[in-house]
Every structure is written in C-alpha cells, then in structure tokens.
Amino acid sequence: MAKLNFVTVFLATLAALGVQAVPMIEKRQSITTLTSSQVAVFKPFSWFAATAYCDPSVTKTWTCGTNCNANSDFIPVASGGDGSSIQFWYVGYSPSQSTVVVAHQGTDTSQIEALATDAEIVRGSLDSTLFPGIDSSVGVHDGFRDEQAKTATQVLAAVKSAISAHGATKVTVVGHSLGAAIALLDGIYLPLHITGVTFKTIAYGMPRVGNQEFADYVDAHISLTHINNKDDIVPIVPGRFLDFAHVPGEIHILNDLSWIFCPGQDNEDANCTIGYVPNIFSGDTDDHSGPYDGVKMGCS
Image 1 (cartoon, rainbow, N blue to C red):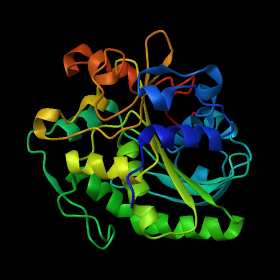
Image 2: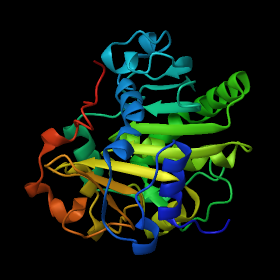
Image 3: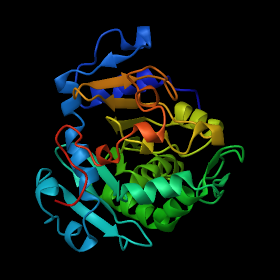
C-alpha cells in the first residue's frame, strides 16, 4: 500500500467530519493550533472513549450516565470484558456520526505506568493469524499485544455485524490509556479482515506501543489521531531509550487549553508532549484522565 502523508490523512478526517481544515497545515508541516470547530469534532468520540469504562451490563442497553447520554442516538451491538483480566469493550453504530464505533476501556494511571515502564519490558512480533502479512520486524509491547488478542475475534465479529445491520461505510476505533493502545492495534487489525469500509482510530492518553518499524507501518497505513492532555506522563512511556517510537497524529492540549497539532513521530517541539513533559518526574498523573474538551474519562 502506498505511504499516506499523515497531514493529508488528518485533513481528510476533518473534512469527512464536516470541518474546514486550517489552511497551510499540509504545506508547512508545522505546529498548528486547532480552531474551536476542529476541537469540537472530537467531543463525541471523547464521550465514546469515556463510556468504555462502563460495565457491559449497561453499555448493552446504553443506559450508563452522562457520557453515554451525550451520544443518545447510539445503537449498541455487542460488549464484553470483565474490567479486570479483560478490559471492557463495546461495539455499536452512531447514526449522528455515521460510523460504527469500537471502544476499549483504559486503566488507572498507576497500572498503565507500571505496565509501560516495566524493567522487564519485552517487544514481540504481531500474531500472523490476527495480523497476516505484517513483517516480523514490526515489534510491539507484548503486554498491549496480548490484551488486544483477548478480544480481537469477538470485536471483529461484532464490527462485521454492525456494518451489515446498518449498511455502514465507516468504522472508528477509540480508547483511553491502555484502551488507546488496544484501539491502535485494533485499528491495524480490523482493516486486514474487513474490506469496503474506511477506518480511523482516535486515541486518548496513549503510551508508545511499538518500535520504529511499527511507527512507520502506522504512518503508512493507518488514519490515527492521538490526543494528549497537558502534563500527562503516560504518552512518554515506554521510553525511546528502550527503542520504542511514537506513531504520528499527535494533538497536545496545553495548560491554556489550546489544542496543538504536532505532525510527525515523537515531535520534539516545546508545545508537543515530549517537549512539554521531558520525563516522568515533570509530569502530572492527574492530567491522564482529562478533561479532553470538558470530558473526563470514566463511567459517569
């Protein structure tokens, strides 16, 4: 597949969502501040990501409080997980967004930080059955890989069912924290098994998931936006010194609440995450759950 310039994908995503893009982003490839209308595009997906923290017993009926009520027209198709050994997940269709939605639960800051900074951290190749055709040089965090594998086939079946039931042509995968890492892997996995629809992934507070080859694969194949809040430390782990690399598509929310688009992989500009939060000691774990344009992650 031909390599996709991320800025082109970013602009196309905004256009598909009915938002006029900031002029000159593609030409300059520079740090850009999003307009209020561009920020607003992401709010329904922030609510979807937050709702992934709700138990399947309520996401099956979509009676789960403030965050899911904000997307009141959503039609659930399937959900699962136990919130412990298997992260909660759900799949359904959003008529107002004209997309199938796949959402994965995150985890609390202490757990994701421990998982992502474990001294015994190991990368491995993707399972060739789940990810056919992806080169073995593409390495991913084995903990994130194993979490995605637990629900992969169930999610795939639910997405196929939702597409068929609603004649959908778009699929959007969302998640926060650990759920963001799973969502990114689902964003790679699902298009390998489903054709005829377009896919995009919107992730919040996402750690680095794989090596440079992984980041390059995402850059070439996946429509991705990952949103980082203020001084959140999770997006800077695992460290680059462990040969992990961040994927493109970063939006960083600054302390003044402006949203900054940071093109490229691990953009080192002072307004992008790794310039803003150079190490875990300068971060703030309280920023991990948001708010993302007023949306706090969690079942509320």
